[in-house]
Figure 1: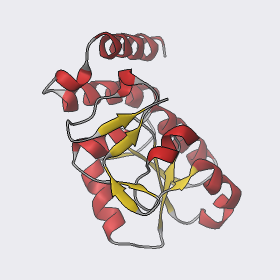
Figure 2: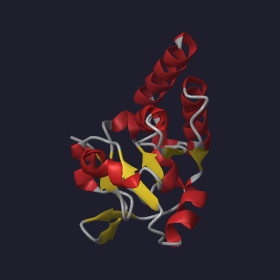
Figure 3: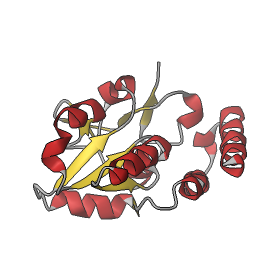
Length: 170
């Protein structure tokens, strides 16, 4: 736990002091951050963005996508077909036999939520690298039925997005 906190603080410090959008190695920055999350949640299964896209393209009722970010980020955009965590919580008993795919900005909050759902008997999985990894793959986001490359993020430190994407924060 101590190593996770130290690593996360160090990486956040680096990304807050240096413009992460100026680096060509954004995928490596995201990978380093997700590795520290995986240490904290070793029993959580992580799904790469490309694999999740393939799963979602099948349009099966057995797959549920849940956005665990805060409402400000969700208002900017979500992954296509996702529901909010609050929406899911009100009807989750209907999905006990489904595959639940959870995401957040980088995967920390979603890994914690996946862990909680697994303990409740759900088949839950985490989007490895969250919305940042989704953007790195070039996938679109959804804003009220419209494709967008705007991504809700907490602050400039999380703006580890490709040049064609716009990080939006309060």
